[in-house]
Image 1 (cartoon, rainbow, N blue to C red):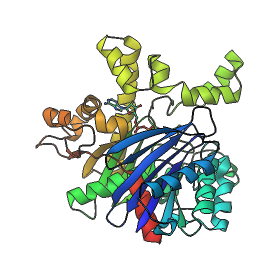
Image 2: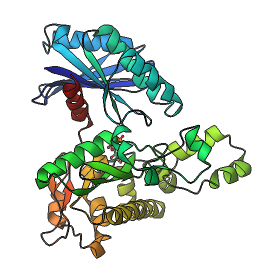
Image 3: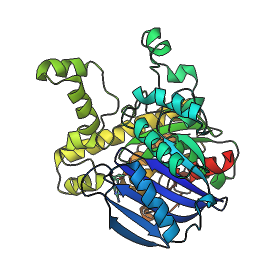
Length: 393
Ligand code: ADP
């Protein structure tokens, strides 16, 4: 059965087509700069990547070109072969704890959460409408970044703010990156050959979050009401004292929108290092003994170690510690710095093995005498979308 896994952003649309249940990727690609000048797309098929320029005025046009490419490349002979389209949807609020078939009523329900994710949900939904229009016979499925964290209990997801902020306005921890945390925690349980296990997943990318997972169910996570909470990220501040905001507004006359923009896009590794949000650029500066980059790195490690230690205690010990996403999968020195700080818990890295595991390699990087195995597991959010879509069909 052929299933498309789709991630529609405001100016991009990523896709992978799977043969299910084999989970074989038949074709993948990304449309970029939708609605902007110089738009283009890249398609990857049989290991070959082709880039083409195209006028992509909106998601509809991109989906139309995608369908033409599928037919021209003979990935499909007719549109009827596509039985399902699974869409990544950032926010499902507290209404969706699982992936769901996108009926008109469900879409209306999701549109109500646009306030909670104004940059993401409307774009995700315009992708849904484009596919619904052009592949009407396929089952459309919504897979939420928040769903995996819906197992958090109230004593973990509530903030100590006036009750009405929660009951009336939905102010609570939602958590994000759910599909990645789900994929990695399921995969590590397979590798451990266990149905019951306590796992900490460190999703360290440009955005970053850590989750505490007991027997496949998330009990706590670092991102909060928005993805800005928790650990320090590429350009996001992570946890800060909220009083900084009115203080800086008073000092600078910046509007709340400007402050929000600075905390989201100009903070984190970029803000402290003054160099970049990309860890590869910061590493180069650290080699040159650039003090702000060294400090940014130290703050980053501290913020991660603090949460791993907290979740270790919350879980009452762990069966595995996992690293995933851009930094977690490709930066052995960051993994080493984190694990070295966890030696009091008996968790130890094998330096040589750790250096080997990069660029998509999956496996154990801890030493033989480590109390807990440490895994590197390349994440795969697209396959989670394809699996959930297949299961719902
Ligand atoms: P997101 O999905 O949040 O955009 P990714 O998980 O793709 O992010 O991670 C991207 C980030 O991973 C880059 O910004 C960079 O900081 C980091 N990264 C990627 N490759 C490496 C590497 N070889 N060494 C260090 N950091 C890397």
